[in-house]
Image (tube, rainbow, N blue to C red; front, side, top):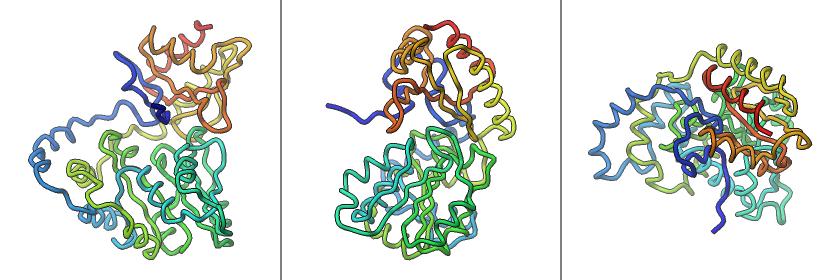
Length: 326
């Protein structure tokens, strides 16, 4: 059986000490959340709210929009497939390289066979590049087009660039905005996200969404984490990312590409260094360090890896190993 490949495949390895593969901050203190959830385990013995309405109300109140303009989903990927279902006849416009699920969802529903409508998938900040498309540029396109625009802001909390506010999207009939509580609160195992948009679009998505798709503990975590922060100071993280990039750029055979987030691509000179998959296995098997082999992103090949900034001592260890491995 062939599985789709993504980053952070920690489950494939044993004894990984440092995980550079995931774009999520790897040192979030979740002790209080775990303690809270330990007192909520009785909730697994009965059905959760079928559509997470309590969490929708909390999120709407926090962002100043109406509950009818928000839909909680089981992570951003759940939202991507819902939107792909709704616009299954639209032609997908997907830049490369970017998050693979936009293309995979579009292929599943055979988009663009007999239609003039287009749906633009925009990961912003973009994965895997870490670059941000200016909001003004996107607004100009949105306001002069009848196409559908899906802006995935999963990594919005990891950049200092200006992102869309929910209130800027709900007034536009052709825009959907994706948010990831997975990334914001560093809880990828709980699968939690939400879509914001014009209430007519949200209602159409709600009509095709599955009941009970967000489990009880995920809903409880989303409610409890409102107003809390588990990420490091953003300016510190950006500074450390630039230090990390500069260190890598001093190594012969590697070029760390520019980024506006905490993660970035590294271009490998294949005449001097190992291919991405081989480098990943050496680091994982011999040094218990996990990186992202970026060769399966459309538009990239085995000369690309992706890493996310961790603690300075961990970043330095990876830099040292990259210098030594041929």
